[in-house]
Length: 185
Image (tube, one colour):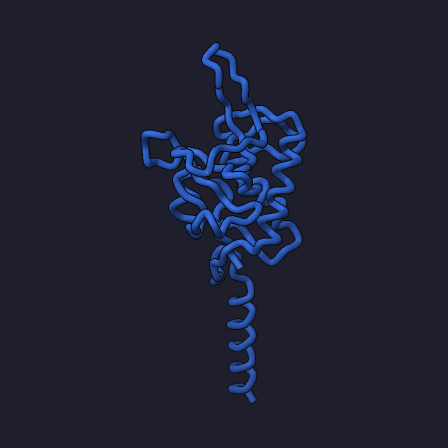
């Protein structure tokens, strides 16, 4: 009887100690974000665009705020899209280059779907320094939403400041790569 009680106690202890492991300690599977999650993320980017946002390096504010940078926009849009799902982001704060190197599956331009990732950088450099959410490829132009700050006409005043919808020729050398966000499942 004593041995049986000890075995039951040990089994209960082992089972409850395994169950109490934190989420970070649990084993998870990495997957590409399903298309519906990516589309939801894009819809949140549209909300940011309509919310009179401003660009702020390192910004990752919630929709109620108005300052956010490019990687913060992507992270926040995916965080919102993942609410009430079984998925989680790999990391809650990443630069565009980190997402390119560690949190995305690289895909061909032809495989892009709404909400997928566009990795960008300076035309004369191969480094990824910017990220956007893909909308569509139409008429030889890639349409996307991003957050940036730019003086487009050289007058010293930022013509673009915050989350905007833009498009570039699909052959623009600022496009470095395309990808799908990786998630924990």
